[in-house]
Image 1 (cartoon, rainbow, N blue to C red):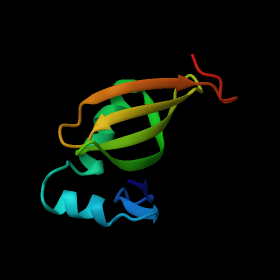
Image 2: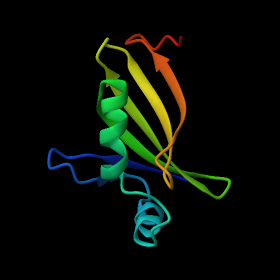
Image 3: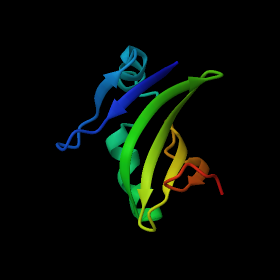
Image 4: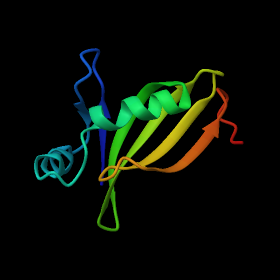
Length: 100
């Protein structure tokens, strides 16, 4: 399941599309960290800006897929463990969608 999340200018996560009930329930049950707790350290570590975020469930785990704009102009996709905040995967691509 994938639920698309957007961060309005206020900084609070909101649901853009898809079924976000599972994401909200997992947050309420404290199975995952809030996106607002995960994003700032990732942005600082990678010197990037958040473009969008998705909440995903796979094999019983919860993940945030973050799409970032790095300071060098590249789009960076990050897979983060929603329970721990740990970065699991980093995938770089250029503005033209080419993968490095």
